[in-house]
Image 1 (cartoon, rainbow, N blue to C red):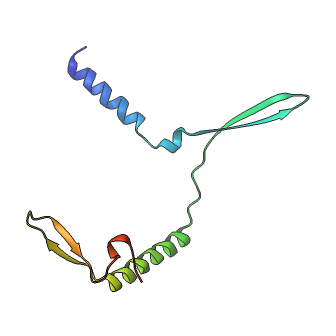
Image 2 (cartoon, rainbow, N blue to C red):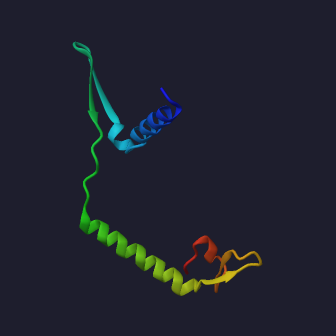
Length: 100
């Protein structure tokens, strides 16, 4: 087997292993009884049910929080001596998330 094929197989294996971790999670539940001993069942962890209305409400709240912070802190972009973008705030503590 050539080196190129080995590399290709390694990449394919890593790609398959790096898929969604939640699909690989297994939940084990065990019950104990005096008469029957231990009984264990295994099942896959289900994805949580999505609620589009709640997601929309959360997004609106997040945007409102960002707008409140921007109105309070008034961030402005500046460039330092090496050309790196820096933010300058109108009030102290804004770099730590202060919004009031």
